[in-house]
Length: 468
Ligand code: MLT
Ligand code: ZN
Image (cartoon, rainbow, N blue to C red; front, side, top):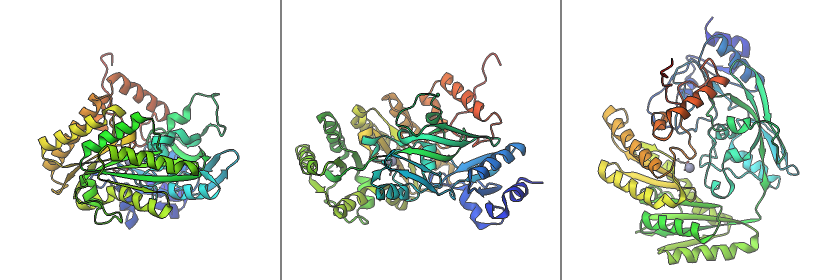
């Protein structure tokens, strides 16, 4: 009996999206810049831990690759079934089981949409800070699998900092609960931290206990507009040195501005070449003073326009300009290879200058925006050439390799928040030693000796050692 029939028999036909179902195509794509479609044999839309465990048991029994998938919003191909087989989707596991403002924790299923979860949490008077740009459609389980960040990571940290406990289904069907719901806890090895960010290669998250924090009483947004990116980069470094601690410190260049200009309600000055977006939060009576301090700093650093907003409607107008960037660039160019290098904070200006040089040398426009306060820059290689042309792709990925090489040379890393998945796997050796890669293979083999769980992701192929 083939794998599709076995899954239909054990989980019911309604749980399986099989051959001939037009929805199946969706499970062979994600938000990565790869134009290929990776057809799975089927996708299983699990609704419970038991179903997830059953899929993992059946796939092991049938020697079939299985690729976990959240909302499919990943940007590095981590959820693509590159070896075929089964896509295990958690999109239907959408229950918020508990929000406890006294314990400052919540318990959720992995398919809960992050933005919806934030709304529910804030309605209960508390706050869940991780805010990936895709929060309106990404899922919290996917955020944990990639250790997603977002603008507020600057003050509040990334998803890993909020995951206290996990229930994980392992290859073969065993279900493991690890972690805690307390503020502190060191009784076991930190397996939770070990599962977060592993892009579904160690196990499938079926439940999460996450940390909440008190909701800030007020927030304000300040936008500084500069004539060029280098000035904006200097403004970021100066703000960081000045001791001001905003919750958000974002940057965007002229390509990004020009792409959002027709869509955004904020009217950018004609000579706008870069923006710095800053947010502060805390006690209401602090907002005025913080806005003034940052606004003045922007003025002194040569801003050509400064906008400070404390009312929600005004703030959302400013935020809109930032949140529209990725989609607007995607609409404006046929190819957008969007990377998310992270460099030490003192190297932001130097990294921007190196991107300029790579753009000039290769002739490929590079849009830069992102979470500059963390040194986490989205360097987007743009092209209007044919995405299926191997020569075009070779040229773009070669330029991406140059960006990675420079980021690593400056003490940085390939990925600050999107993950490695498929697209960045060939570049891991630029950053990691063969020894480190080998130890990661051993760690992966402990959780997934069969190698069937999300195969072909994250780790470059194993090097044969001399003794073997
Ligand atoms: C963002 O911050 O907008 C996303 O992480 C990056 C992207 O869409 O490239
Ligand atoms: Zn980002």
